[in-house]
Amino acid sequence: MTENRSIHLDLADEAATVGLGRAIADSLRGGEVIGLIGTLGAGKTRLSRAIAEALGVDPSAISSPTFTLIHEYVGKLSVHHFDTYRLRSVEEFDDLDPAEYWSRGDGVCLIEWADRVLDRLPADSWRIRIEAGEGTERRVELTLPDAATLERVEAAIARDSASLRRVREVESNDR
Image (cartoon, rainbow, N blue to C red; front, side, top):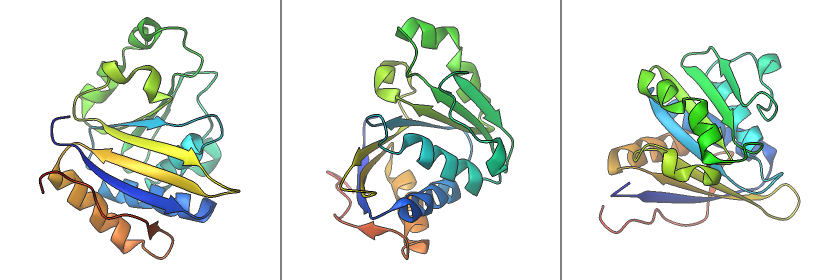
């Protein structure tokens, strides 16, 4: 990622997390790899579920991939949902052949606990860092690969601004 762009958001509650998931889903084109980073209980799976639901995946089919490592769902885009929490090494991640999934370009790859395999993700992957706040509050940082993606995501967030509250302007060294 050479020209990273970041958006910082404070999410007041689970409804805001769902709103962010909708906004992210609305900005996807297919072929994105999204790494989700955060502590246990921060909201990685909830955000992944919101993205998948917004892409038309049956909500009853969505579950955490912790024990099966990868779930695949069909929606407007294919959703490949990875969880690296139980992997003992990056080599175990490599054994899943994740590049096969993101090279297809027909869907989105959501990778929970991505901080464990960051060096294996494509250079143009998105990063979403989630930090738990008080109660149901969350602080989110979206790091996007380029200005065009940033503009697309900002526009999608603006369309769903009723459930999202911006806390800082977009940070960028070169806009």
